Length: 289
Ligand code: ASP
Image (cartoon, protein in one colour):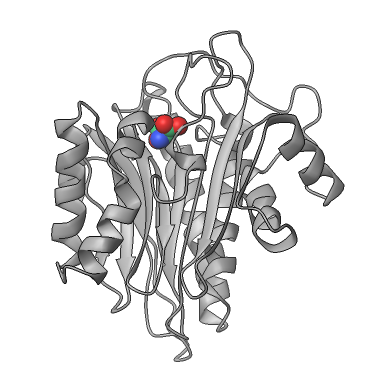
């Protein structure tokens, strides 16, 4: 299981904000690992890890989502099951606490892939995703260096891969803007070859078909995961974008490249079913890994 809490600038909130974010990453890794260690599906593990980070308020997702140009908050998320290629997403929803829970329901309880705006909110609330009470969102102003988008990828004991990503988008965005985190193939992808969750300047990740590009490179061009991820990130850079991703392939190789000064990230792994209790490994700056 590999997770990220966004690529970007060094944390502005000082050591305290960084420590809180690192604690939240550790909790998310342990929650996801508990599911995998019990033989549970990768899909449940990535949803649980992302939901914990959304609820923590430490990242630009869920409770901690940044404000748009007009001070509003809108959330994007995608979840994808590599075993079945089923995927669900929500874009620009404003009324629920967890966009990833809404995305999972779109995947499992509708014939659709993506529900946006008021329709997405109405569906998610009707499906029992908890409503965001007034004041729930922290509505962080558009300051640089808030820990960012959250995401997770996992490979389970049965060899299934899954990916999930959730975000409040780009701080100060135009109301109505939707980024790569709501677009399967751009910010999130999972198939039989690998699972990818991205973070960064979403417009360029969409234009690079980023997450799918990595899967294509691994599955069809037989490139090693790390090289595939590095090349896709290079294409984002050539388009004028920056960011990173976490990715895992069917053999359990993990890649976590980024082109920004920092990326909050963590990984946990071991042999499922052996009683292994691996500890989370967490890093923020490039040289700490
Ligand atoms: N990729 C996200 C978006 O463009 C933002 C981020 O990862 O920081 O909405």
